[in-house]
Structure formats: C-alpha cells, structure tokens
Amino acid sequence: MVDSAEQTPSSPWPDTLELTLDGIAQGGEAVGRWQNRVVFAAGGIPGERVVVRLRERQQAYARGEVIDVLSASPERVAPRVPGASHMPWQHIAFEAQQRLRRQILADQIAKFANVDPGVVEATVPASRPWGYRNNARLHCNGRQVGYYEADTQSIYELDHDPLLHPTLNETLAALRSALADEPDDAPPLEVTLRVSEAHGYCVAALRGRGDRRHLAVRWRARSPALAGVVFTVPPPNTLPPLGADTLVEELEDLTFLLRPTTFFQVNVAAATTLLTLIRAGLGDDGRGRLLDLYCGAGAFTLPLARDAIDVVGVEEYAGAVADAERSAAVNHISNVRFITGSAEAVLADLDGRFDAVVLDPPRRGCHPRVLRALLDRAPRRIVYVSCHPATLARDLKTLIAGGYAVVRATPVDLFPQTPHVESVVALMRAESAQA
Image (cartoon, rainbow, N blue to C red; front, side, top):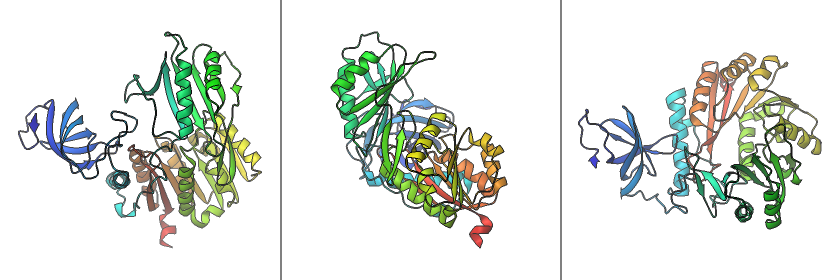
C-alpha cells in the first residue's frame, strides 16, 4: 500500500493507497488526491482517512472502493444491506446525505455554468428515508430475481429491499416463490412492478421472450395485492393482460390512470414537493399560458392546469400521452392539450406565446434545439426540473448566455440512500428579474 504523502510525480498507480478524502463527486463517490491526481473512492465520506483499492487507472485520475476506514467520519452509519450497489449511500447518515446533495448541485452549477452557489438552497429531505419507492425494475434469470449489479448484467438477489414500499416487498416475495417452479432454462425476463400508494395494490409488466402466463398465474395466486400483469412480448406477438392493466394513483386530489410502464414520480410525497417548488418558480406567470416539456403522464401538467389559462404538454412516449389524456378526462380538466413527439420537433412547429415553461428532461438533459427554441420564444420564466446536475449545468450555461438569470436552485431528496440529486431551478429573463 502506498501513502498519499509520497509525492513522486512519476510514480505509477499502486493497487491500493491510503489517502484523506476531502470532497464529493457528482456520482456520489468521495474524492481525495494522490500525487496531485484525483482519486474517486466509492464507500467513503469527505473527512475520512481511508485505504482504497483501485479498479480503474487513468493518467489524471483513478477510481476504487474503500476497503478500510482508518479514521471514520461521525456521519458514517452501519449499512442495512452491505454491498447492495443500488443504494451506495446507505453508509452515510440521512442528514449528511442532504448536505452532500446540496454540495454536489452547487459545485456543478458554479463550475460549469458560473452560477453563484449562494442561490442553492438547502436540500428538501425525503419524508421517508426507507420504504419510499413505489416502483421497481427487476431482472429474472431462471429462478433468480433482483437488480443488476452496477455496470454489469449480473443479478444481485435481495430477499428484502428496504427502499421499496412494503407492499412491493410482499409482492416481490410472491414472485420469488412463483419463480421457484420455473425451469432452469427459462429465458431472461424484465419485471416492472408498481404499487398505488393511494389504494395499496400492485400491477406489473413482464417483458421477455416466451409465454410467461403460467408464471403470472402462479404469481397472482400467491400475491393478494397483485391486481394484474401485462405482457410485453416481441412483435408480432400479443398477449392479453391477466387482470388489471391500469394503476390508479392520487396526487393533489387528482386521479391518475397509469399503465405499468408509464413513468411517474417515485413517490407521491416527492411529486408534491416538486409541484410546490415549481409553483414557486412560476410565480404569477403560473396563471398564464404554460408549456410543459417532457411532461410524461402529466404529473405536473394537470395540477398546474387548475390555476393556468391553458397548458400544452409535450411528450415523446405515446403511451404516457395516452395516460395523460385519460387522466385529464377523468378529472374533467379541459384546458390542457397534449402533443406526442420529441420536444425539439414539436417546438419547431408550435404556435403561440407562452408566459412560462416547465422542463423535466431525462438524464441527458435538453436537446440543443430545445434551448435555442426557448431562447427565441423568450418566455418570462423557465422552471427546470433536473435529475442530473452535470447536464443541468450545461443547459443553464446556454440559458444564462441567452438572457436568463437563476433565481433559486433547490435540491430535493427523491432517492434516499443514493447519490441521486433531483433539483428544481427557477429562471427569469434578466430584464424581468431586474424590473
């Protein structure tokens, strides 16, 4: 093992090294330095003295895992499921996770968008640090079921996932029981499992080759909470659903009708938090004409429509648009129009002026054409909901150069025990902000 104090610039990377961690990276790894080169250390906490085993070595940086903690942070706690790669922050105290999320967001937008880190507010903590997820995507191989290990297609099996809603864990246990009767050579299977927090039942989607109806029948027989299973099979094959094919969820006293594969927020409390921040960012312009890009099933569109003159939602996934339209109808919301298509393509042909725009893009952020079109349209306010601080910072740089100013940025803890940083950033046209 090599100590970080040895300062020979030409030294090659060792297998293990000892160093002090002094920062946090966007991906959630703690950061230290060895011979003026960066080391990303999974499983560490800033302030600790650790031993790291390296697994990736580049000229300017290396990545590895903490294998020994020589001086522990007071914020270190015992992990509930050691080695579970889908919750890599379970060794960090819940309160410290919030501080680190704020630090990650502030670092990224200050470094890459030149935004004053002082505009970044304290993280809004999750209402539940455990048992909060209302959906899960699992993988089956033969009788195995679990999550893929990080950066692999090896299944990590869990008897109980402490991140999942209790009803999902009960339904998952029934799936394990049903899989025990599957043949060893059963083809791989992807399982999407969702629970209605409002009504307490589950629906699932099975995606893979072969006829898995017998598995679904056994699963439903062993799981009272599983109301239905839908099948996604390669075309031209089709299979009818077994039981219910729609999940009914409630958000802000609105009813949402969702197919199992339609994206929705990971829990209702988180969606409510995001809506509160979005409304604050929209201000009085939230009562005007709104454009909701990457709107999904209308989780933001429909609640915002109750105060707006009218709202246009744009979403590329046709299934989500169909669910949004069904939900608008059941809630008797008529001042909403949904358009199926990519945001960049729809914006090119969309007529009319908008007072404000809500953006909630995937991790890759906004297409450059979307940002250019928004700058051309010049809405007074933009509220950007981001799930990736780096792509957020990249897009903010473009919007700021085009005449917008960041009013506030708020990190939100949607995924406790993970380094995921959701954030809501409110922007206003610079001349409006000065008025």
